[in-house]
Every structure is written in C-alpha cells, then in structure tokens.
Image 1 (spheres, helix red, strand yellow):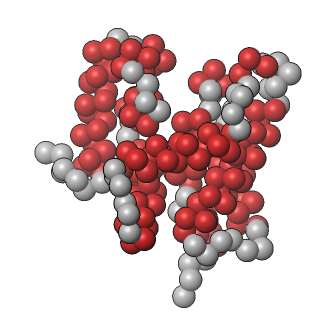
Image 2: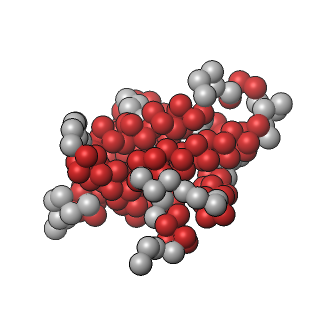
Image 3: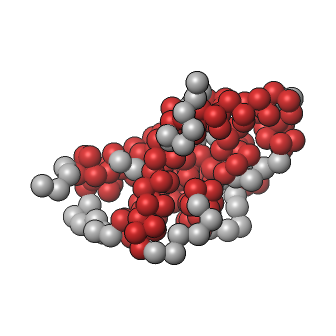
Length: 185
C-alpha cells in the first residue's frame, strides 16, 4: 500500500527547510518565515493532482515549488530591499544547495542504487540537522553546507572563531551520532 499523501510530502519537510535556509540571504532571515514557505510548498504538493513517481524527479519538483514560494515571499520585500535581490535565479540557487548537500554526503555515486541512497542520505541529513541545537545547526549549515570560512561564519553568528569552532566540533559529533556514523559516548 503506497504511503498517504500526508506522509509522502511530510518526508521532505526538513530537506526543503534546509535548502531554503541555505539560500535565503541572512539579511532577510528575520523577515521571511522559512517554515511558512515550506508549509505552503508541502500544501501545494499535497494538493497536486499528480507528483512525479521517480524520487529524483519528485525532489526537483518540490524544489521548484519551494523556489516559486520563496520568490513570492521575497517579492513582498522587493520594493523595500532591492539590494537583497540576487542576480541568479532562486530555483538555480536551490538546485545548487541541493547539489552541495549531495556532495557533502558522498564524493561520487555512480550507480542508480547509489543515487537513491544519496537522495535518502540528503533527507536523513536534513532531519538530523533539525535535531541539533539551533546554534550548532546554523554553524554547520553556514560552514559546511554554504562553504563559508570560519571567520565569515563567526561574523554571521556574532561569535568568536574559537566559539564557532567549538560549535562545529560539537555539532558534527552530534550529527554523526544521529546519522549512526560514529555514536557519541
């Protein structure tokens, strides 16, 4: 029996939230309700007549819906904050974030079964990140998934480089334990 539509779309909540947070300009973070945008995306996916059956196509489809919803939300602030607009399309940015997540999970996944494992890994990573304390999650996302330097991450988090290094250490240790790679003591 196939999963209910609610279970089908709910599976992607953390993943969509992660890529939205990674691509949202930090200056807009307080103005754009990422969880609301993700909720709207899941609602639209749930209401859709047909979703792609293939997992990879489904994730692209959901990213496209998310990009449109995030774009709409950002447009509310366009007249007030033109400097925040990006030159590249939001959809391309979300795709790039997803690719960075995939690259972080594995260097190369050549076979179809390994591609499926990689997609499942991205969903597991997003779920595990949501279980980290907020400061650790933000540090890991900024440094490892967005590729910011330790100094840039420290500046955005308004902390010293040493404090961010500790957040990263604890966050990665906790994340590995959650993913079952290296259980924490």
